[in-house]
Structure formats: C-alpha cells, structure tokens
Length: 480
Image (cartoon, rainbow, N blue to C red; front, side):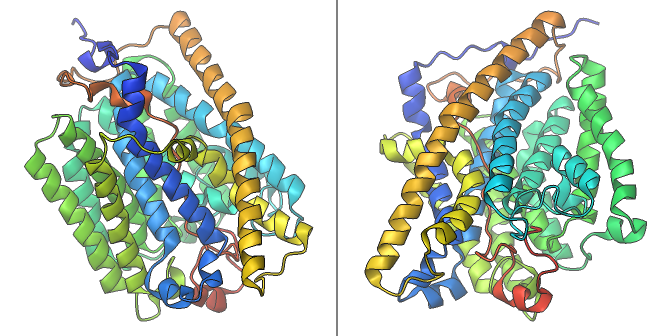
C-alpha cells in the first residue's frame, strides 16, 4: 500500500526570519520572565521585602513560574513534532537540546559544591550505578532515585510529556489534545490524594529491581523511535507512552493531584496552539482549557490543606491555587500581545533560560559562602548589592553556557539528523494529517526558541514547603 507523507512534513517555512522572531517574541518573553521568577524564588527574594511574609503564604513564586513554563512548553513542543512530521528527528533534536547542557551543569555543580550539599546528588547516593542509570534515563524522580541535581526532577515530567506526544502522534491522536488535557485534569480532581506516592517501588521493594524492569523497556522504545522504520517507531512510541503513564500515575513522589495537573496543563497549552492555527475548533479548546484551569484551582482548594500541604510544594491551598491561576493569566496576557514586539532583554532571557535554570541553584550555593554573605543581609543596601551580584553572575554564566554549550550542541544535533536521514531515510511516522493552515502564523513553531521546565523549590533544596521540612527533616532533601 502506498504510504502518504504527512503534509506537515512537507510544508516549508515561508515566513522571513525577522517576522518569525517577532511572532515568537512573546514566547521568549514568557520564558525569560518565568526563568527570572524561579531564580528569584530560590534566591528567596520575598524574605528581603517587608511584605514578603504574607505574600509567601498566599502566593508561591515557584509554582507560578513552573506552571507558566509548563503551559509554554505544552504550547510549542507538540507543534515542533508536527512541523517535522518525523519522530526520529524530533528525538534527536531533544537529546542534543537537553543532555549536553545537563551534563556540563552536573559536572560544574559537582566541582563547585561539597559532598555534603544535598542539592547535587549524582554519584553521592551510595548506589552510583542506580544513580547514573536513572538520571541517564531522565526518569530518576519517577524511579525512587535522588536527582543528580535537585532541580532536574522537572525534566522527568518533560520526558514523560515527550513520550505521550510521540505516542499520540504516531497513532494520529494528537489532534485530541483538548480532550486529553481535560481527562488528566479530571483525574487530578477525582483522585486527589487517594493514591499513595511510589506504589510500584513500595510493591517491588527495590530501586534496582524497578530499574531492571524499566531500563529494557525504555531502551527498546528508544530504539524504535530512532529506527526510522514506521512500524518500529509506532511500537517504540507506544512502549514509551505506556511506560510514562504507569510511572506517572503509580510511582511519582508528588501528591497525585499535583502530578496529574502537570500533563493536564501542558496538553491545555497544546490545545491553545491547535485552536490558534485552526487544527482544533475554538469552542471545545476554550472549554477544555477553562476546565483545566478550574480543576487546578479547585484541586488546590480541596486537597492542599489539613496537613497535606506538608507533602506538597506550597504553604496551603491559596498559595497553590492563586499561583496556578496567575500562571494562566500571564500566559493569556502574553498570548493577547503575541503580535507585538517585546524587549530584547526578555527574548534574550528566554534564549538562555535552560542554562539559567540549570545553573542558578549551584551558583547561589557557591556565591554566598564564597563572598561571605549571610543568609539574610541586615541592611537594605546589602540586600540590593547581594541580589545584583547574584543576578549579574548568573546571567553572565548562563549566557556563556548558552553560547559555548547549547548552541554548538544544537548544531551538532542537526548534523546528526541529516546524517541519519542520509543513511536511512525515515518513513512517515504518523497517518496523513490535514495541512497546516496557511498564513503568517503557520511556521511559528519552526523558529521556536529553547524550552525548559522550571522548578519551584524552597531555598533549603528540599522542594517542599516549610511544613514538609519540619515534618520530614533531611530524608527527602534535594530529592524533588
């Protein structure tokens, strides 16, 4: 039977580079803003403000930043895959986008920070093999293994989202992102806290046994999606998608409603993109997004109270629900302003946001002791000076890493893609899809800047709220 190459894979990017940059300036601005907010959250900037205490109890900068970035990532990542129409090219791009910068940041963090600093745990857990394998798969937070760096737990959710997007694309189900988002949000609302965290690990009783099961499935699935063969790609994508769903629902460390709201939020972002470009009717997309937002706010109110907040990211339901709602409000504002030009400093922050994300915590832990800065400078001038020094060093280091690591790695990734295509041209990875609507916004995904998932985390490195720190001590320090 003759196979039809999806029109999505054939369509050329027709917009001029300058126009594409102008169209996507709003995404870079949101990315840069979210990165800065999360860095300042970990810097604990609210403690330096006279009104910071009440704000911390009713609004969480970390949750706000990370949810904003989940929406942005959900908006653009599936569009990138659909634009290529090639699962292998998508995954090669993702590998070279994430791993080189992550490896460099891990190495720098290990060198800079002492072994007793729990924010860097790679090769410091007592089981180096499990640490290397789980962090190499980028599923460590869903396998009961401490994160190589405390901030990398969100990359696990990013990886699982890639699994889902790939599996849906190969089955031609990617058009139903609104329904999928609503399904995850509904599950978060219904299940709430009913499922205990890490059920698989509890039943198996051994991290290594879980790794022995997961690793072959992961490698077999990856072989499939990188094979270039349509059947093998579809089978591999289904393996990865199933693995991600099982780990996400049965072995996450987070409370269930928080865990399931992450893919709900990301697929809602996808629904916005699809509706914008005419691949999803606007009314169902708006209803799905409205339900996701309402479910996020309501789940926080229903479940993040009565002691449960000791095991979640925030002080209580107000901090979670208001931060989640604010993330959507800011994304909506950026979307309404998408045709305007944004300041270059914000688009630049968006470009370096992944490096900023990886470097800000180890730099914070290194600079303070190096300069002899107390945990909380006493004078107003001292607070301003310390904040300025930290941001200046962080932005400079992130720019250098972006230029010397990220950009060369991305160029190398493109060369690897071309070499793989020359050696074995990839077959179409999905059933024929309708053409992308013509118009100035159609090629927007082609110029998308780097994406990153940012992390809400308390400055002590635990990722839990203050109540959790008191309740759990150091047992889970830097593990989320």
